[in-house]
Length: 138
Length: 349
Image 1: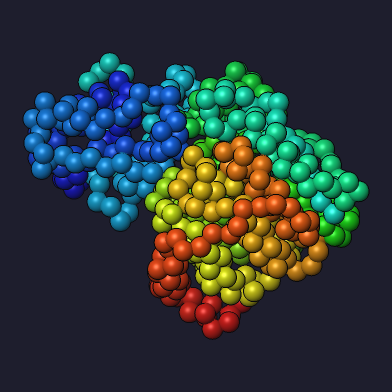
Image 2: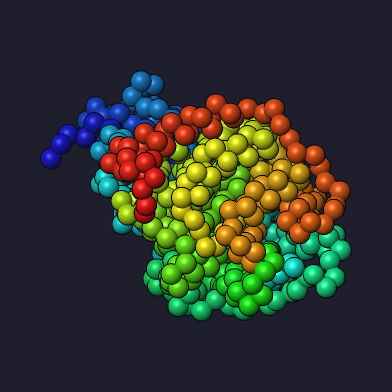
C-alpha cells in the first residue's frame, strides 16, 4: 500500500463536515500528509441566494490548525459544482489524492434517505479510498 | 406555426419564492409567448407524463425508482441547490413528456417550430442523479426517443451553465452531437474544450467555455467557428435547443452579457442547422429574471417565426474571442490525442 501523502476533505460548513475536517487534520498531523479542504460552490451560493449559513474558510482551517497543522500543510479550494461531482473531479485522476474524507450528512440534507447522500454516492463512485466520519464520532 | 408543448410546472414543484427556480418562470415564459400576438399560427398541446420506458432510455431504473419514492415520501433537499416535493415526480415526468409531444406534433405537421416551456429544467440531470435544479433530463429524453428510431440529433445548449447531464448521457453516442456555449468557470465546473466525447463519439461533444462578460457576438462566433463545421459534417435530422435564458445580462445566476436580441440571433442560427422545417424544438432550461425571461422568449420565438417584435439590440464588444480561439485549439488537440485525426480530414462517424 502506498503511503498517504495527500488527503482531501469535503467542507460545507455543517457540523458533520467540521468533524470530518478534524479527523482528517489529525490524520495528517500524525502521518505528515498534506490536507486539501474542498468546498463545492453550487448555483445558489454562487449567486448569493443560498439560505444556508455562509461557508467561511477560516472555520475549516482553524480546526486543522488546532489539530496541529500549520498553513503550508493545509490549503483551501472552492470548486464549482454540486458536492459529489466536485469532490469526484478534484480527487480523481490526474489529481494525486490518496484519501477522501467526508462527513455523514451535508448541510440541509435529510437523514435516512439514500438519494441525495453525498457520502454514499462518493463511496460508490470515488476512485480513491473514502472515509465517512459518523456523526458525533470525531 | 408555433407549437407550445405544455406548459408544465406552473402549479407544481414549489420550492418557495426564495428559490430562483420557481413557478413564476413558467408564467413569465408564457407571457412571452402571448406577446407574440399569434392567433391561428399558435397551437397548444398538452404535456402528458413521460412513460417509464421513455425515461429509462437516459436514466437508470434505480434512480427513477428512488426519485419516485423520495417524492412520494414528501421529498426534501437533494443537494444544496435541488429540491423535490411530493408532486415533483409528476411535474418532472410532464416536463419530459412535453418534449416528446412537441416532437410528435412537428412530425405530424411537417412544419413549424416547437417551444417547450417546462420546469423543473433538465440539462444538469445525469443518468443516475439530480442536480442543479434538474430532476429528469428533458431534452435528453426526447433526443434518446429520436435516436431509438434511427434519427441523428443535434443538441445546442446556450444556457449560461454547462449541461453536464446531457453531455454525460450522450458522451459515447455517435447519433447525438452535443454543443454547449457557457460561462466558465461556473457551476457545474464541467465543459472544458478538451471534453470531446467518448471513444465511439470522438468530436461529438463541442464545448466553448467563455469568460464572464462575454457578449452576443462572441457566442455567435463560438457557434459559427467552433461548432458549425462539425454540425455540417454531422448532418442532424433534428435540432433540439437547451434554451436557457440565464446568459441574459440581467440574470442573477450568471455573468454573461447577452440581450434579447442576441437570443433572437442564436435562434435564427440554430434554425439554419435543421435539415428542413419542422425539425427544431426549443426546451426551456434556465432563466431566472422574469422580465429578461419574458422578453427573451418573445424575441427568440419572434425571430424564428418572422414576427416583428420590439427587442433589445444584439450586444458586442465583450471579452471572449481569445477564449473561442483557445477552445478550438484545445479541442483539436484533444481529438488528435485520442487518435481520431480522420475527423479533421472529413471522416465520418
